[in-house]
Length: 539
Ligand code: FAD
Ligand code: NAP
Image (cartoon, rainbow, N blue to C red; front, side, top):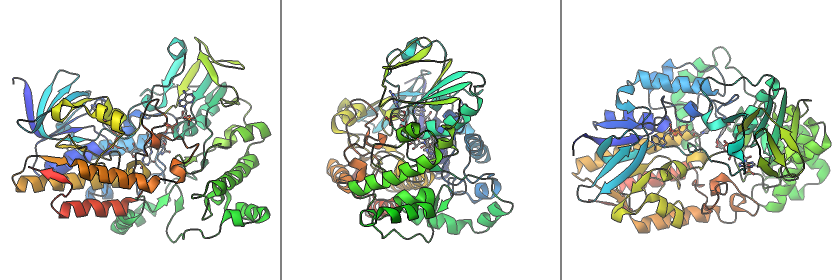
């Protein structure tokens, strides 16, 4: 067909996944083209430019380990890097590895059809381009498809409307404005303290309170980075062997930490308070039973409430800030001055559990109780996570069946989070069913990209041109993953996390990320590869 370009592999996306996939496949001798809808590289760190956007994994760990040169040359400045620094890092990587020549920006993949006669994918873009490739590597991101919130009248708002997950490149000056923020997940919690400093008045519209604790971020000390670089491989090995691909979370190191032994339900209240004084924000989870027993979990939340009451002066506001759902059900948030923000005179917490939003008008957010007049509305309302970006592409596999149809009817099934039965030669980097968002994502991304590259080299060496997840292997993996979540806090009553797809109306309730940890998962993937890709049919 005229105008069709042929490559061994098409990579979708140019974030951490896409950039590494381009490099890795190119190094292995495949012809490769990446297609990215943004006009720059960086993925998450290109789109999420809201004030306060920051990683909560330490920079030295949230970075590629595959290139000694990059590791050596790049200079991190903070313990937990902010969005501009990570975006600059990924641009540095793209230049240093000369990746740009293989990436087409401002190019959205709209459709992909598997041709069963040639065992190749036919790929279409919004620029009218057509590609044919044997392999497609979807680095489309777990948190890349913004969720359009179902708020009546949102389109009638005449003030400035900003989404955290597609924040304008030129930024926005909140000075002197009446601002509303809807959403108090990680993004809301990060931007609220900074917007509060500039705004004339800030209204925080909270539906679910956040489990957040201080990040204790700081600049790296002189010599600190050099110390890490002198022995980087040791840290990288520890990361790869760690349950969540990290040695520390925020400023807290897990090294030498033993799992707690004491039980909160067996501890008198006065003693719990002593632990609180000793451990501060680490106290609520410092018990063996809190993450496994709902009653113990509620006691942990009580301690958490006490910590909030110690910071927030207005008792009613403090009470509203205490979550009503189980601790550990959603992602732990790290913040900088979040709870302190509610002591400011120019900040009002609007508790949507007490006064739900009725509608949004041209100049206000109206709840059943009051009308809040606004100049600017910030939506920190999250993502259609893990499946959203792929579902927006019309992906047709065997017999013309769409991936969207499979994931809508069966839930987000996959084999190892790497492939879906019926969609040969399509790999999903950090797909549902893999540890992905429950880990340091860079470690998981590297593991997937390396597994996929090795797999394609194996197929080439054996003269094979098709690999496809077997339905039975997929069903067994889905069942195994579900069995790990069954009866845990993550799937408990009252837990409505985006991990479960609960934030998207109509999405099947299945815990999407794999909870068994990276080491076990990596072992399974390695075993599958070592046994000639068991669970996949090759032809
Ligand atoms: P992304 O970075 O999401 O990149 C996917 C790319 O694919 C995007 O650029 C998108 O435009 C493109 N794309 C999607 N669909 C198409 C299409 N149809 N056609 C063309 N291009 C397409 N993880 C951590 O481990 N630690 C953290 O502290 C952390 N902080 C985060 C903070 C924020 C604000 C967010 C949103 C996520 C955070 N994450 C964090 C998760 C983060 O998404 C990953 O760490 C990582 O950046 C994902 O890289 P990726 O390349 O897989 O996906
Ligand atoms: P999120 O966690 O899904 O939070 C969305 C928020 O918007 C929730 O408080 C939600 O309330 C609220 N909301 C959604 N629709 C609403 C509506 N119609 N009315 C009122 N409130 C509504 O999204 P996010 O904050 O963007 O974070 C998503 C993920 O990205 C995080 O969990 C994390 O993995 C990653 N992230 C990480 C960092 C970091 O620190 N490293 C920063 C940002 C993001 P309900 O909870 O009641 O639904």
